[in-house]
Amino acid sequence: MLLIYIIPYVIMMSGLLTNTWAVFGMWIIMGVAMAGIGFSIMHDANHGAYSKNQNVNKYLGYLINIVGGSAINWKIQHNVLHHTYTNVDGMDEDIDPGKLMRLSPHRKRYKLHRIQHIYGWGLYGLMTFLWITTKDFRQLYRYKKMGLTKAQNIKMPAQLTKLIIAKVVYYTIFLVLPLIFLTIAWWQVLLFFIAMHFTAGLILGCVFQPAHVMPSAKYPLPDKEGNLENDWAVHQLYTTTNFSPKSKILGWYVGGLNYQIEHHLFPTICHVHYKKISKIVKETAEEFGLPYHSQPNFFAAIALHARMLRDLGKYDVV
Image 1 (cartoon, rainbow, N blue to C red):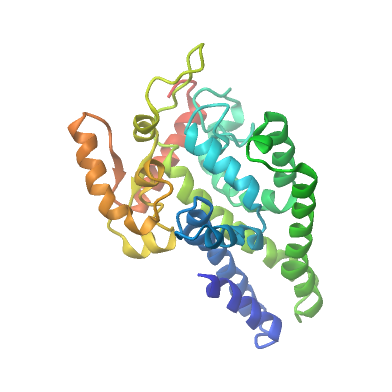
Image 2: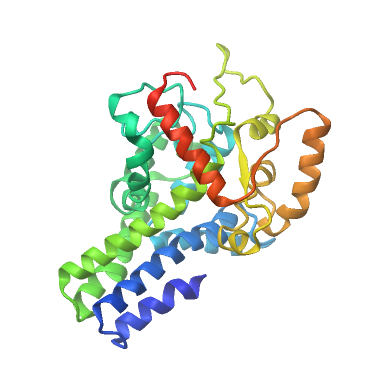
């Protein structure tokens, strides 16, 4: 997966390709690989699940930085907030894209949301643009106010410095150097850079969102004391959906995230074990009368997610 990301870049920078469309193809391949690195390497590593050696996990987790993100911010948003408070409005940032989209039935519905099932895919494509521009900085300060950086023993000045350096290095390698050395026009380099990120963002959105924003998913709210109705493990079953459990190729590319239920129940176990674990999880869920949501293929999951986007945009209660 790393080679799929690095080789097209090396080919372009070496001057082996000069045809504009061929260069464009290299950028698109890099976009596909960006998402793949996030799915199949960085994700497990930042959960401490890629290797028994935590130094291996630590350094492979930093691969998100070479695709424009921040390992520290990601671990807080994903490991702490998303995995602890899945589909809980106000806590799970994965269902809080702002006012442009309504991903929770507990959010205010605006007229614009009526067509979010149409324009939402374009917004998914902008996901990684937020990483490389303002999101990581805004997140870092928000997490500081929430006390999450202190809880994770993160020193703000040092982390802010690392974040700035990481962004400078990323822009230098993947935008400034191509602008200098590629033989195509500067505006084409910029456009292709945008296309790479749009490709990665769209793929990321199409894999992560159908796991939770689905007609079958629950959106529980805490009571006055701050307690949720179900315990953590049962909560994951009510809020999560699998897809394409039989696809080995897709499973490889998305790092086992087609088994989202197993991932949410066992986030520190490497994804290569999810398929075997899934049989036990499904049987146990059925034994105790609990849901086990799974779609037979990726396209069925996407279709249901699109329907959920439409319903959330049209109705106050879904």
